[in-house]
Length: 579
Image (tube, rainbow, N blue to C red; front, side, top):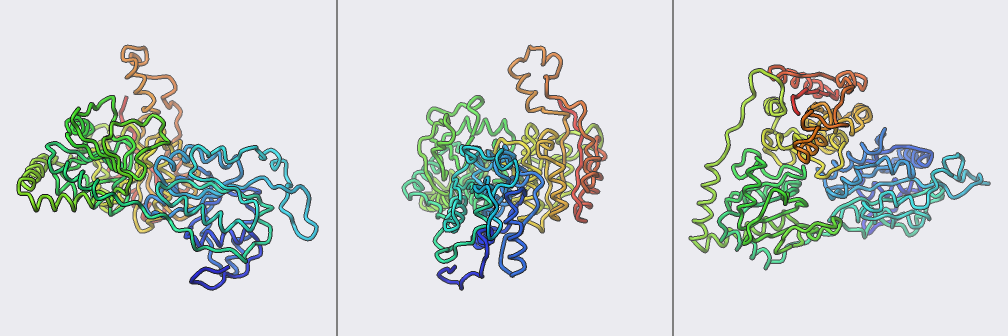
């Protein structure tokens, strides 16, 4: 096998060896492996390549598939490079669960490789055939295995011949990584994996990741002109801060235009320092800013506001910048947009800032208007809160305690659901990439996400903040075991409000005079026999602790962080008083 610049690849003896070699050649650093009878050729191939000094992805054991997919998703968020997850046929694919939804909604590049029931039934004459040898090889032979993920995957392909392997792997990585990024789903049976490889025509070049589109200059001019004339503009963004370039672009435009910035309804990354005066952290103030805006610039956001709480002005100009502005995967997405621009958000916001700067330099009236807006907003900056000295523990107190004990470059993985607004208003994060979330609705992401973040940023401390319901969705025994196996320790802070508060509050809201509201309870939402979380931690080789009072939380967190710094995963259960 040759490329335009390299020497031929080493001799390979099976298609499984060729597959691992191709994954590495296309930049896949990790293969998260949940093994089964179908993965045997890959497992043997890994040692064969290792013995021969042939590059292959690092294989990490996976004890539950959804945790590994969350890890691969998080790795993409911080690196922009897709990783691979191997799962066992149809059942393993189903165990990916809601994390498939999260990958689609957050536009994360991931390659999932699933085994396929072998085609052959008899043993080979000259060599093992890889044919069917167990009852499950009939039970897992389903009509449409890819149908499990078809509504969520960006691309799917079965590898049925060794001579198509290079094209299938090249396309899988190319499609997964090209915007809008998504999930590529490959299937391959073990009898194909055991076939001799086809190396004569195989190649790894010629599968470029598509360059992101740049905005049309006329659209840049139009957005900058609207901002120059605006009285009460606002920037709404969910994902602009995913990259350092996007974070810097948001800050520059906010500083230049006196532009309030909001938009973490979807639980995405930090888009602007929490200490920046233009960062609108209070949900009520964000709602008011959008409702009062005469120019609304939406960048990389699927849910810029809730129409049930926001009524935009009839004369408001609404601009949308997104690599997927039409959002065809959301059938009833119908926000009132005047101008939609299909382009990279960071590039577009930078271009708008350049244009607006030029307009202000040429027009003193514009410069004066922008300066007045900046001055007004800077005067509204809030004073950081202080941790209460004593009393019952609250979600606010936990966040204030975290402000005291974590560093500026520590990375917080957030999945707090009903307490997400508390995090948005209270937790201090000032650097790009130091607050991440799934930006999607599939619960149970935070633990696997923390694993992926730690892999992508091994030199950084990682803290997952999650509700008790989301913690249990995250398959904690698997996640903690994998953290120990992989050497990727992180701290989990559980905001324990004794159940599914996110499913309780809508009952009270829709039936304010109902029996549930009168009882301050809703059936099916309370945990009366929850696990002993510190004991669960101990069973999984992790440090475990519980805090119930504000006066104890800082010391408890410091001990947990010391354990993580020493290489041990840790859990701190924070018992908070919430309805």
